[in-house]
Image 1: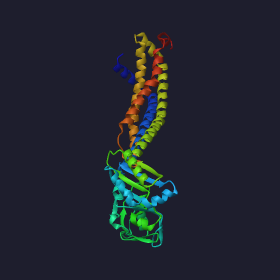
Image 2: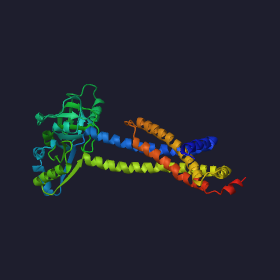
Image 3: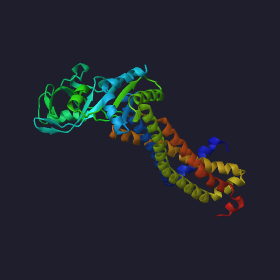
Image 4: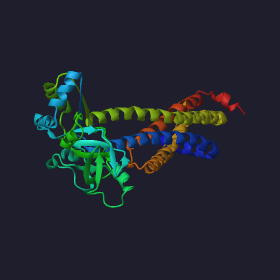
Length: 397
């Protein structure tokens, strides 16, 4: 029996028992669709997270440093000033920009009404490094020096809009006991793992004014932007050495985009594997359904098997006949399951506002596994059919 005639015969037998074949087919369809949908959604979620990193820049390096003892803490206040930290830019040509920043904990209010927000002291470089876009007005400038100017985050601006309906530019708010004039309003800013504060909920003021506003405030964080392809480890070593040369017993912590992306990709692989294994349980159930259907088919067709053997069919021909039938069943279920899995992942992506792309790997893996399930669970019924005694099969009725 040649291969094409085996396929025709297998399809003919499947169509002869439509309902039974359909029920077995549903198990494979659901299993394959589960694998494709789960793995695809895991990949789409990872791509969406990586896209948010790329919007902030993949070559950012965040540095946080804290004194290890009281003696170092006093030295840090005196020596690790904003101007000293700016010298880090000269450590390597790969460092394109450095933005030290500090925070204050003074109260915020407008005409006696309390506002909920943070105070960030930085320079104009911060806007370029962490990609702050303005809705209107201008950002703080290094020329502002000790001027009482500020830029509002988007959420803080919404709080003020509850009290005033006019343009916020030129409005005066209270930071502690000092009055600041609003010079700009920022657009909604996506949160970043490289910046310790939420810009949307913050007031950004010149760093020199921060020192004037709160004497105990310290600048112990900075964000730097690097050239693409820069070896981050060498930059971290240079920055650590520089900070240690200024203050002894200083605890320095780094966060880089590339490190976070590598960690995220490793977690994504584990997460995707877990989703694939969960979806494979449904595919396993579908495979058991195929085996059950094929065993019933072998029992019902015992006389046919005996006649085929009596007419010269070899045991290999009988085994191939039933194996092709199970593979055709799983093959059809795999095609339909891949399609339904892609449709499901598309619907989930639209509901969650993710960017949808057709991922070939989950679809290919789901299809190949479904065919392997047909081969694995169809082999035993096919083998059992080939080992039947033709004399006993002809006597079965």
